[in-house]
Length: 323
Ligand SMILES: Cc1cc2nc3c(=O)[nH]c(=O)nc-3n(C[C@H](O)[C@H](O)[C@H](O)COP(=O)(O)OP(=O)(O)OC[C@H]3O[C@@H](n4cnc5c(N)ncnc54)[C@H](O)[C@@H]3O)c2cc1C
Image (spheres, helix red, strand yellow):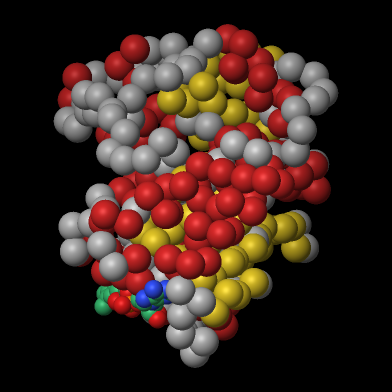
């Protein structure tokens, strides 16, 4: 009856969003009088044991080279088998690209339902209640899944993973029954499309918009990002213009991010952009138009020209933080 959490690794390193999911599931499990079992594809036994530091009692470790990279048909089958073995009615995972693809498929396979991209989750009357943003982040909806089998994806960077501590997880080798027919699609490799950090995993993000006036000015965005240890993002206007790759686009048709700090440079704050970043914990905007909608969601706003403000801000931060 444990809560199952699907975790992710890249090059053997467990992703932070997975620890957030394990920690959150452990809180829910504690309130429901049960425990957490993590499912880990690839990585090593130490990583499997390490799930205990975030609250998992047990890890089902799947050491199958065919599954080190995502293969949706095989993953769905493997996780469904793990859930059946553990008697888990509830499955959680981060709302990463993998989680977004896997969760609905898994819900169908388990004959259950999915609550995607949740930003809050709690136990209410013995049942799980989740909160998720809808209408491009304009409203929040409270959802309860009525089917017996429930799948939740948790928005990365919203829930805290906390510090690792406590006992190691008990590790059990798990070999799902898979045939060649389960590998209809298979990832053959991965490469970083742009930037040093992916926006969905970054703690801080500096994004640029059309106010930057051209790709030749992107060193302003990159310079500030470097000082802050941030990933670089972009508005759709900039991506459509070919200044930046789509992998950096934040918004309704780009990526959804919830960093601790989101700096918007020369971005107007159209609703479709806000849809992807309004759950950021601290928003700083620089825009020369004092009426730009971005200022309605910003915690700190600077009305000014990015070409004057950003170099001065970068210099000042360098003095404070160092680089
Ligand atoms: C279906 C749909 C989906 C969409 N999905 C997305 C999405 O995922 N992400 C997204 O971002 N957009 C999306 N859009 C587009 C969105 O509506 C906006 O067009 C886009 O976000 C605008 O980008 P921008 O803010 O960079 O440009 P603009 O709206 O042109 O704003 C530029 C801003 O820069 C400021 N500025 C100009 N010069 C300076 C300067 N020197 N110093 C300081 N400020 C300056 C201006 O005052 C202005 O506010 C979508 C639209 C639709 C219809």
